[in-house]
Image (cartoon, rainbow, N blue to C red; front, top):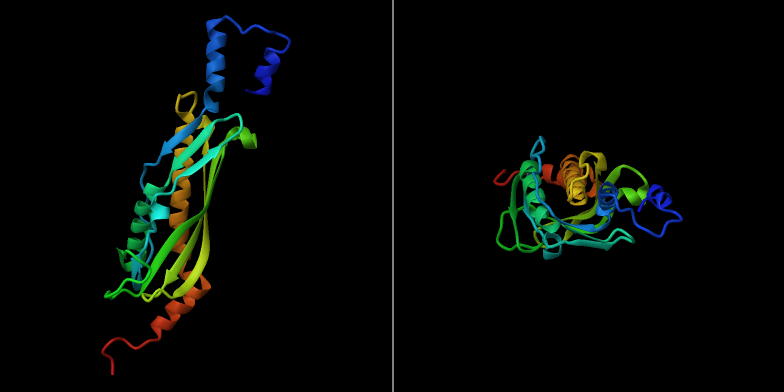
Length: 224
């Protein structure tokens, strides 16, 4: 409950009987119950030049089943089922980034003509709500740990990828599910941010750049 509302009733032991006052209290407290968020939305396809490599995409169970849960004092239980969106995010982004990107069941897939395997994981997920930061925004941070392996399972490169998204509480008014809608929007913005960073910065990661450069200097198959 806000300080303004507390001061309104300071010194009084009775709740207001006015229906309008009661409605005001309900609306004011409505954002304190937490939210259970099932993700849905679209990931834009990045407009980037495809790299001339064939990549396997390994999405570990912990990633595609990831659920964030937190109890925020005085603001209830918050739960974001972000795992199901990971498949859509990484499949769509890698199809735009590489000559070929296919799902694989391990980091060392046997009997393939792939050049490498990309394996993302979520290292950290955080949210903040307006009452915590005394701002107008719901915010979401996602930290991924990205790994690139050769097809024998040997690590080529490892790097962090941090994404951020926010949503203005004013965009959702007094809707009953405003917390849920705002966190969903902030999370979708963070996911799109992750896709943009991955597609734009992949080839600038030092060890990835070295691997790509080494591949470009290898003679083509069948060359004399």
